Length: 267
Ligand code: KIV
Image 1 (spheres, rainbow, N blue to C red):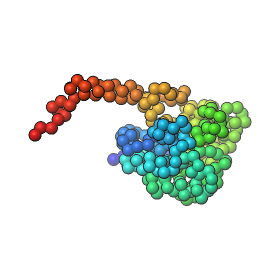
Image 2: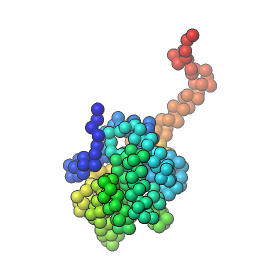
Image 3: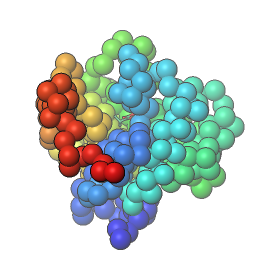
Image 4: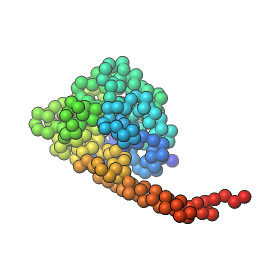
């Protein structure tokens, strides 16, 4: 039996061993992930896009995120499960942030939560951490700020922006996060932030110097044809593999080859 990964294990990996993180939103995929060697499963609000077909992550609700988190934790993975706090579940007040973070642990069965933003959410981060709920930060291209950013753009470019990113990272660390996602940030900026932090950084489109990496599982497995961000590496081509299996199934049903005797019951 695999040993469960804890927040302390993640912290201890800094400078020693790279951290691996992928997203998952359901029981079946989580079972497969758990059979592999992945440290952290993020129940990302990207579920609103890859599971629900939304144009961005803004539409997914707390109840929907709790549903996906439950589906993941039902598989009882050894990986650390982090629930992603959706848009408007922590921005309006500290009390709202703490109670919604608590729902991820109490109802969802997660071990930690993630939220987006820097200095503007410091009070929320500190209050969640003070309730003994481990918090992961997220800086750079934070998808919930897509309209404020004016699109999917690399963040932290230029001296001033890089300085601000570093200040936000250090402030989040001070507020009590145990790890920090850096999304779509120039490699050198991510390297500088990673070096300055005591806690691990986890990059997505942030180069090779981060303490770990995260990818959306459907991107990693090549389940989409039309959309491929520069930072995604496809480790499989499941779109083509699944389509080929379905075409073969349809052909065999139409020709009468399936079901054969081996897949039928005798009296
Ligand atoms: O929701 C998500 O999938 C994420 C990752 C891209 C870090 O936040």
